[in-house]
Each structure stands twice: as structure tokens, then as C-alpha cells.
Length: 258
Image (cartoon, rainbow, N blue to C red):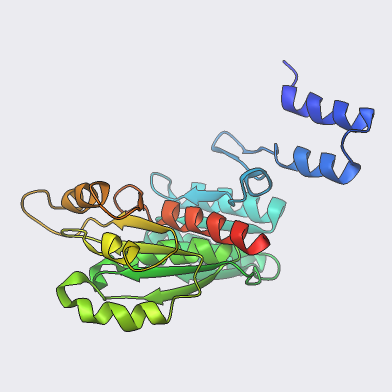
């Protein structure tokens, strides 16, 4: 087997005195991969390496497989975060949690579950605001909210404040002005992220949502609109709540650390 060149570099640095023991431990932990039989390889060093925890995508996995992966994650790191769950899959995770004595929280709208063997992640100083244009956008926004919270951020939410009733936006923004970054989820014509970005002096992440119908429905018009925004925004893929939440949390946490 070929040696891991990153690991060799870390060990050489510690040997030569260019990095401390604690630095070497952190670097090695960031390379950690744990196999779950032939099913999966958990990237348990992701949080150390990238600042984003390992999240298991439930889609395409049967309930038994998913429970086995989740159990391994909790055993090795104290926590498993699972996304895009079906109700049947959650029942398997709930049974696992009850059997093993794990704390288990099901975020039904977000279709996410978190299993832990210890204490919850305490909120830090990073602040993320999440805004939706309509109530149909809330499930995607909730996926962003859950992962941002699991990454230690305080999360402010303001739902159903879209451009069709733009007067709803201004009181919602007042409650979110301490945020380091805004996530704005919108379907149909996807106007709201550009509007918000024209009103706040913080980064805005637009999330097109697969609401809408007919020509360029299912989020396509919203995605095109956000990509053509005159306001300066970043845009993730359709329904990519996890990506938006994790990216926003990284920004907020980095700002809060300064």
C-alpha cells in the first residue's frame, strides 16, 4: 500500500519540530476515514479539515443500511447527522436510538435527524439569518437551519416574506440585522435574494426552490433569475438547503472568530 503523503508530511513536521504535537494530532484527525463494512466510508475528519461535519445522505439507502451507518458514526464521533430522510427511514433510526440510548431529534420539515451519545452542540457567536419568500420554501430553509445550528451558529428565521407582499420583508429584516450572512430561499420567479442583497451589507446566498409550475417551473426560473441578479449574491443549486446552510455557517463562524 502506498503511504499517505499528507500523513508523512505531518509526521515529518512533528519530527523536525516545525509543528507541535497538538497541531499534528489535529492534522491527522482531519485525514480520518472509517469504513462501515462494504457500505460506506465515513469522513470523520471532515469537521477538522473543512469545518463542516460529515452528513449521511439517506436517499438510496435502505433502513437497515442507514441505521448501521448512523450507529458507526455515533460510536466513533459521538454524533450522526442524516439528511433527506423518509419517515420509514427515521423509524429505523428512532429504534436504533432507543436501543442504544442515543439522543435522537427528528426535524420533520427538514427531513433530517441528529443522533448523539453526548451533549448537544452549544451555540457559538456566528449568526445566520434564513429568509423564505413563501411557506412552500420552508422545507429547504429548514434543512439549512438544521445544519447551520449543528455547526454551532445562532440562526434567525423569517418565513413567508416574499416579493408578492414586499412590505412583509422590512420588519423581518430588522430582526435579522445582527446576522453575519443571509440565506434567502425562493421558488417561482426567485426575486427575493436580489432584493435582500440590495438592502443589507452582509453576504447573501440565494437558494432556488423547486416550487412553481409550467414553463421553467420546478425551480428553473428561480435559478435563472438568481444567476442573473444585478445585486451581488452567491447562488447554490435548486433545493440545496444543506449546501447553503453549511456555507453560511462557515462564513459566520469565521467572522465570529475574528
